Every structure is written in structure tokens, then in C-alpha cells.
Length: 276
Image (cartoon, rainbow, N blue to C red; front, side, top):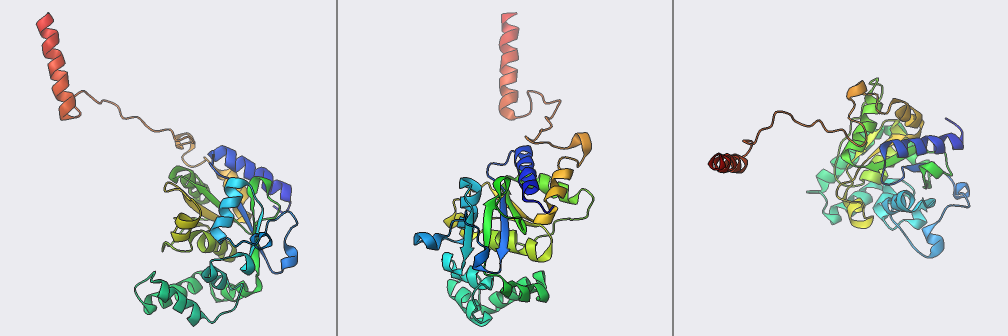
């Protein structure tokens, strides 16, 4: 898809079909501040700073179009990790060592090597070209998305995974660490690698954005939106669990399923027999 209206239409179809509680978020990475649309809110223009995960929340819950750059983001490790500002990697690692997220410096160094291996050296170098992103509610998006971040419950995200895996062209393989889940893994990695990622919202998502305990998410490349919509609910044919989920009710349950039930059933029979 190359037309904005098509993304909006498919976004509405997906949101309605899955009965999503919040809008999917369209994310577009920009190489220059001149690319920021006039409709987009910049926190810095209001004398504020937000985190990247907060911007996603404003888009998905409040239908806001938001522009985030280094000047707008208070989560400075994310700014440097996205390479929107230059600081030597060892300094970024030092900041994380001081946070105490992982056991020691060696663990942090492994973490950063893992990310570079995940996206590949070429894409890692490419990250330095970008200065920020625009995020927008997909059904009303003002940008053609590089990636799309969708929040939902486990069943809703399962439907998306099944759609991606229906022809087994886009199976979802993810790793988790509990940090940078939405901004880095949910939005950036699908854009750089062209591969979807399941997101278990992490530290920032839980602490800063009001992401609920029951929510998880998935990030997909923007190019896969129509593929997901096309294959939604196809897995299993008539046996697909559907949305809302059609729970299979167990049969052949008797009053003896628990000790308390069995006791009460016996007493009922005793009193019935006395009446007879």
C-alpha cells in the first residue's frame, strides 16, 4: 500500500475486527525536522518533554498525532540508543550500569551487542540518519507508517500472530528483556528488520504510560498491515477461536466434580428420599 487512505481503511478494519481497546499506532521515522506535519504535537513546543512510550499512549488513547525528537524526549537513554544524538556507546553503557538494570557492565555490553546483532550492522549504522519519529492513530493516520504498534490482550495479539503465521511467511520470533519494549522492539526493530516482534510492555511502559497489567503488544512492519487484515481469523477455519473468543465448554461434568459439590449432592438426595 502506498496511499494514506488505504492505511486508514485497513486500520479501521483491523481495530473493529479485533475489537481493540485502543487504536493501533502508526510510526514514521524522520530524517529532518522539516518532515514534521503541521498537525503533529511537539511536547517541546509546549514547554514539556515526554518519553517515547508516552507518545504512543497519547496516540492510541487520545488520538493525538505526536512528533518526538531528542528535544522532546526526557528518556535520554532512548534518544542515544536510537542514535538521534551522538554519545559514544561506552558512555551509554555507563549510564545503564549506573541504573542497575542488569548485574554488571559485562551484562550491559552483552545487551548492546545483542541489539546490534538483532538489527544487523548495516541497519544499525542507518539509524544515525534519523532524527525522530511521528506517531499517529492508524485509523486516522497522517503518515504512511514504517511500523505499526498494536496493544491488546493475549487473545487479540494471538489473532495477529496467527494471521502473520497463516502461510508461515512471517512467523514471529521475539526476545524479551523488560526494557525498551515498545519504543525499541515494538516500533524500531520491525522497521529496521522487516520482521514483527511481540512486546511485553516493560519498565517505561508500566511506570510512565498507564499501560495496564493485562496489555501486551505487537509491532509489525507497516508493509504487512494488509497481509494481517487479509489473513485475520483464517487460522483453523471454522475452528478459529474468533473475537470475542468462543470458549469450548467442557461436557459430562457431574455434581461430583468437587468434594463440596459431592457432599451437597448427597445431602440433597438424602432429603429427597426422606420426603418420599
